Image (cartoon, rainbow, N blue to C red; front, side, top):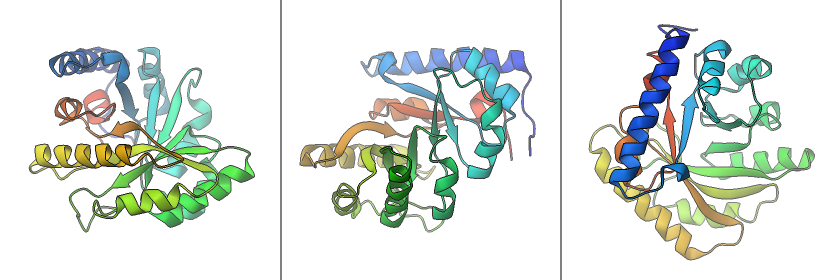
Length: 233
């Protein structure tokens, strides 16, 4: 599972270099760098190396797979660290992670939102969620149709046990600027609707190859994997 990952000193160095790039991108866009969260995406990364990133100041982890999260969770140094689920989540796996994550970013259907709410209520909590948008309408990607996400947001807002806190997307690699601008417009449009139980606090977009550009379009959660830990498959 773990492939081509770096040694501990390399991870520490990379975290520092990523922070420099993030700060430069924020300044270039006249934004406060402290308002942008740097997420370490931990897919196929050993818990030991994830802990090195935490020791280097990372305070947000992004988990792609329920089974992998459950296998590594007890080995993480979790003090003052939040964990977001960012991968495709099957409804039957929600109950296995509901008490291990602080937010589920990859809510791609009303059915999934309903199940998250049901499991959250069983555990006496309200789960913050982001709505994942398939901004490029790609058949190989999950997420809400960008033309229908407002309607979905209004429906999910009425579900107990969840609270919509923003949007998440993975745009096509081609013409990424166009898609970043498009998602920003949707984010603003939903914000202006002022829907009860919906607060557009987070825009999660931008990964290793494009996070600096994403920051220029308002992203305040950037999800960094290979740039921090090396290539994995």
